[in-house]
Image (cartoon, rainbow, N blue to C red; front, top):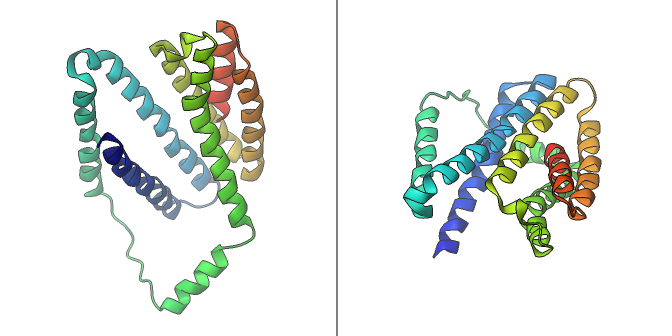
Length: 210
């Protein structure tokens, strides 16, 4: 039953993220749009930090079920926000026109972006879900501590801000390439870390770039 409910939550999250990004894209243009999209994505890390703090402070009193019920409030807040968000009235006319737009949008770049995004998510969840279990099997239990989680989350924030700054200086594809190559290097360091210092250092590098 827990897996079923988690699947439903995943559907909500999978629908929420692209819609929010699309809405932001409609509001801004050019370099400002790039920065706003990146900065909006940084709230992922902020939300994770708040969730970690709530878990640390309240789980002894509420348990995991109580924490899940508490985080439902965030969905209710989102509903309140949306009452005050106005969408431009855009008339979509003629199905033929929409089909032409789809054909124009789907270029040779589209499958490459899909593949790149798949790799981003693969590396992201690999870092936070799979690699820690490997390190634990080697006796490196620091990766399960609350302090480690907070450090890894905080390390993401300057990574977001750095990407937003770079996006105004160089082409966005170069920003993407720099961060992807850096992520690969950080993953190698993180996966081979044996000492506490190297685990924290490599984890921060990987978290910053990912």
